[in-house]
Length: 428
Image (cartoon, rainbow, N blue to C red; front, side):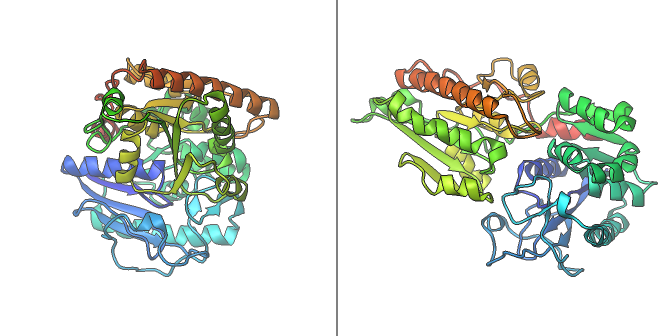
């Protein structure tokens, strides 16, 4: 089968980019011919299997000072530039991305027209070269609608990552602009049942074409191989071992970072006899959050954005992983953390707990009650205070359990959550 994957933003750099990349790798293992169309900067690298053709659409990084950190981790296999760079940064499906980006709400008609010309030109070249049986567009939004409109005789699928639905809510004019074409997609994929319900609510014409496919994780990279049990580390040491906590993701308010940092600052006084060490991984583009990161306590370390290989090392050495986000599709990182031996702590986001319970029967995720919300990804003041209190209580209990040797227990069985299974469901 010939498969063309399309995303308006960078592959590899976010959760949806990882999802696209892992699907491409799975289909490569299965012997399918492939191509990818993606939005990148001219100095970015892409890392797909050798037989996968890449058709980049170039944007202009108005804040570039050489290559950014997330571009240096992979070997470039992109084809040579065939178009001039668009005169604005890469469009980001979240308003805050780990790299310089353009918010969808800030796109003008002229910018949309330029984006359409550039992407449809790249897609046309890929279609002419590959003759795809399936075109899979990531995110149910502007570019997916453009592809559906320009290639009515092709089989075009759309995959939601959750952030696209948030854009549809926050940008109603753009949502109305794309609704007809999104509604005419041949198939629509959701990560979980609650997301499928939201898609049907926003785009009623999609209702009969929605399939829930879940997510996968890279078990070769994320596992507990080489992880030394805490009791063995303590036995071989003359000093106490700190409880190690980690976070990975964008350093933003929507991810619950201010609330998380508030809780972390309280822990030394709550547990004065317990050592704690925290690693935060991820890029920051919000000044208020940056100010908090500039004044972290000594036991909290922000390492910036790191490649997946380094993240695997962080998770394998963590006792607890925290994802205090207020909005997600289906957070892959909690599965990666669980498989690596850490106890995940995650906000009880719509659809996430049922999916985890259905796919990991013996999971050990601790869910933070969802706070009262003022908006799509912003809690009310009362909700924020309750969220901080709930997270503080959960972390305090976990730290005590780990420090005493009562936790974490055995690593849950995540073997059924594979990228190959997800890829096969899409092509079925």
